[in-house]
Amino acid sequence: MNDPAPPSRLPISLLIAGLSILALATSFFFRPAPIETDPALLRSGPGLSVVNDDLGVEFTPTVVSGDGLIFYPGARVEPESYAWLGVGLAERGRPVFVARFPLDFALFAPARALAIRKAHPELGSWAIGGHGLGGEVAASFAHDHPGSATALVLLASMPPYPADLSSSNLRTLLVTASEDGIATESEVDRRFRLLPPTTRRVVIEGGNHAQFGEYGEEQSDGHSKIEGNRQRAMTVDAILSFLEGEGG
Image (cartoon, rainbow, N blue to C red; front, side, top):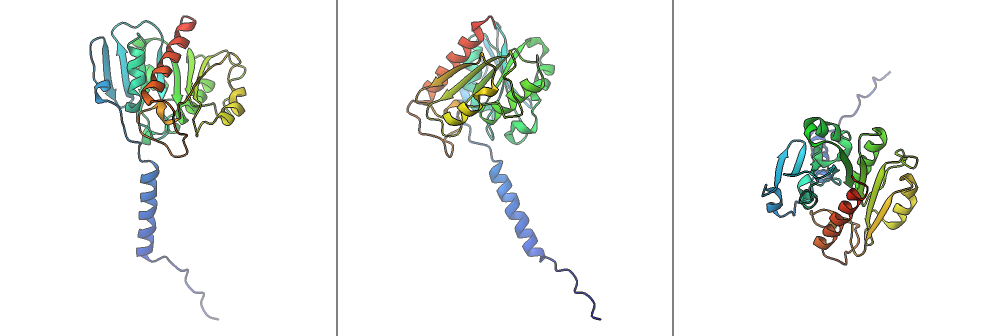
């Protein structure tokens, strides 16, 4: 009887080529979006301290007038792309901490808010929020840690199905954009039932998904009909009105 043929093996060159392609694809997938923020927004100034560290970017007003906001960025978006939010709220007395995540994916450290709060106990109580995937992870955090946040702020985002907040009394703000091609109106309507019944919803007419940050365009997004600065200013106004609405 003939001996069985030895198992075939991939040539080393082919294995190396395959690994190289995998590494290239991985690096492309996890490549962060470009930061298009005005660098001036990331510098401290009169009445405002900006600190950038491993946990994220902290915007702290000299005089704190209310709860702060811990914010989770969208997928592959670095925290610096939300400096507009940090400065806009901090100028009105609200501390903001835009979290930093491994490979810029909130999914890889969903409880980052706990580390931020532990590192900054002097800043008191916080709301939590996020944009896109970051908002989904923030909503899941609020669901899994009831009582840890004073409010939930979602930008173009909805809770994932396991994070049903419909029976929660957590104060919640949902800000969406009419031209959003990613968090579409139909998807928002489908999952709106997962939010608390008292959720406040604000629609930015003419806005799209990417203009909630400053990192350029996104594939599959709709075409905005308003300037990005206008969309972001309207978003700051909506968040401030919400946070101040009930003494928050």
